[in-house]
Length: 95
Image 1 (cartoon, one colour):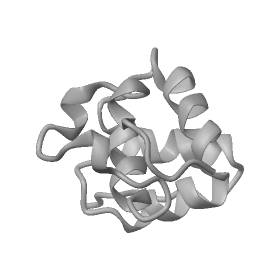
Image 2: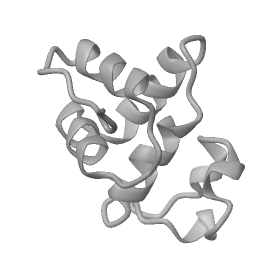
Image 3: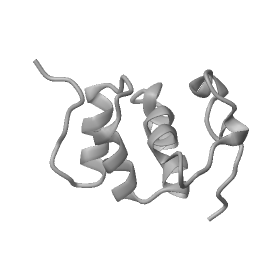
């Protein structure tokens, strides 16, 4: 796997507003890239966004890093991911 990639050529640059996307390493920065790639996804763009992530990461990595993130990922995204990979539903936020 190519480790250094300008992630802004794959996902919107504004998702990585606080860092240089050219310096992200696909392996070392999974915990940043995976949640941010899905941060702004909508029901209309989820399929496209998740397919892009799947070219870079395994389903296990996607689920793992979404569960671990402190990013403000919506529960709808988490549920969509759990359905896609047939895993127990998980939420980022609960009451």
